[in-house]
Image: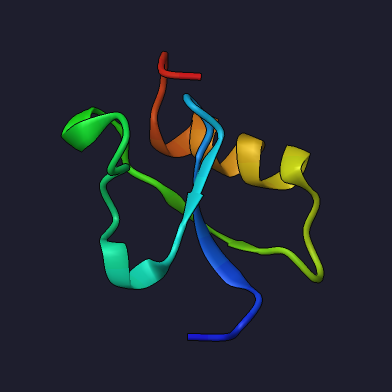
Length: 58
């Protein structure tokens, strides 16, 4: 894991550490988070990935 990597939930816009798992801890297992490298991707990039992985959730 890179220090600048977080897992991102586009539904509640929460960021969590990868050690917390791929399911959003705020939305429970309704949302799969996506990996977001904050030093080289924008939040809109992460949101786009989230929408692709979770159709109808964002």
